[in-house]
Image 1: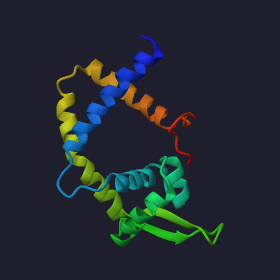
Image 2: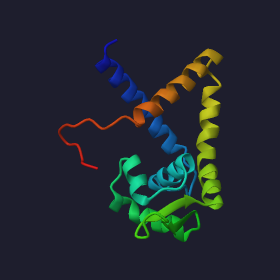
Image 3: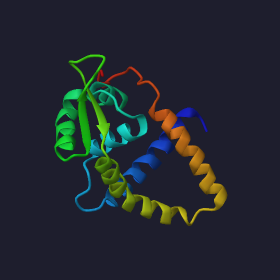
Image 4: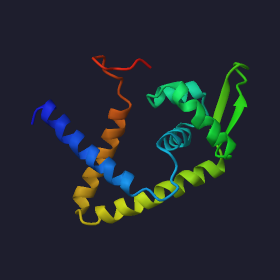
Length: 150
């Protein structure tokens, strides 16, 4: 299998799985952007709004409202940066970590059940695949037609 075939097969599988996971979202689930922000802060710790947007391949303006809603709901905190008083530092609050866990729980339950039909070897293969997918998600963007600048 060449790289193009691999990319197409992987894309098809990821899109189908993503669609299924969106279907498994509980009523009143957090928006995709809220999950992105909370997940980033939980994984990486406190950082600036610009750093979140850059790392998550989002436009800062597209996340500004999300940051405000998360802060108003007590899911993140915002403090002035000690290094640059003009900048703010976002942190996930305990309530935000709990909301993220609760929001993901139903999908994780479905996925765990679906994984039950796979052999232990297949499950281990998916653990490795998940690590590789995270590496791919962190890869620099390729330049090309239709690419947005960050």
